[in-house]
Image (cartoon, rainbow, N blue to C red; front, top):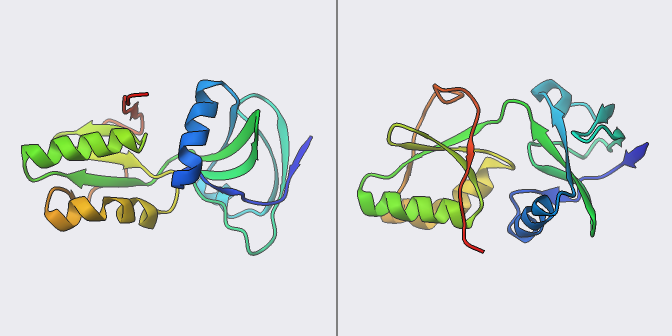
Amino acid sequence: MLRLTEIVGHASDPELAERLHQMAHDGVVERIHLSRTDLQRRRQRVLTDRGNEVALMLDRASALDNGSVLLLEPARAVVVVLDEPEWLVLRAPHAAGALELGYFAGNMHWKVRFEGSCLWVPLEGPREGYVKRLAHLIARGDAEIIDAPAVPAGGVRYLAVPHAH
């Protein structure tokens, strides 16, 4: 059984995102799927999506989140995935902004879902990190955050944004 005692980072952190992306291509990223209730628990036994048993033994100061990276080794990573993600909903007020927003989301390797004129991004880390990265588009009026229902109308499935290597 793998014993994990700390959170080493978040999948949305720029310095980890590219590394995890490459590791996912190599097939060495394991995911632990948790509900919102399970995110609050510091000690629990869970199975990864590969069937490996993990004992989470986090201290009181640790807070699990969607995208928490619990293990990061050269040939293996373990990441927490929230069963029902929170979403950041974006809209571009004009075509040029939509193109830049889509290009930006692709470069960030964000998974997205399209609903009408909105781009839905499932949060894999703290919302503030996403908003901070989008600040330049929002400040220029090329993108806006909108209030929306908790999940897209079509459910929670999402698409990976293609990107260049």
